[in-house]
Amino acid sequence: MILILVACVVGIAVRAFSLADAETEKFRDYRVKFTAKLDEKQLEAVTAGVVLKDENKTEFKLLEGYWITKNENSSSLNGELLVSGKVTEKGFESSGGFYYKNDVITLSGGGLDFDAAVLDFIKQ
Image (cartoon, rainbow, N blue to C red; front, side, top):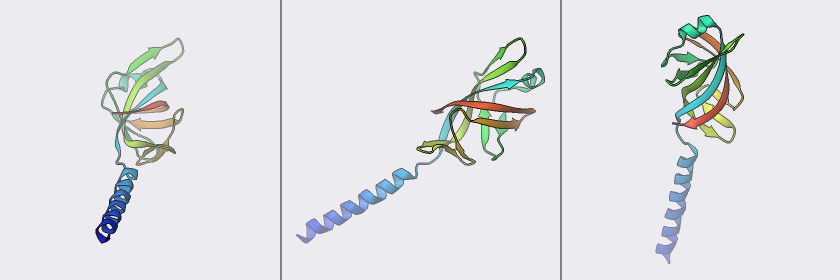
């Protein structure tokens, strides 16, 4: 009887600690799909691998495979940014806070300064 009681207590303790670990999932790399309007001078500065930061100092890295769409009056940059974080019930969490689909994030770095509209978060 005592052996069964001890086994139950151990089982409960193991279950409680495994649930606590599941809730503290570590940040992982995510690709953030985005679109942004840029002028001709900014388009010249666009290079894959450039590290951009937002006002919260979160780092975003521009991935290869981006594309530029030119219209009569403007140009847009479309692609993916690499950022560390995790998707939660509250939104996408990174070191700088929470981000959501359709957010507009002001990014700067590498001679660029633009507003990017977030389209999606994809686990790397």
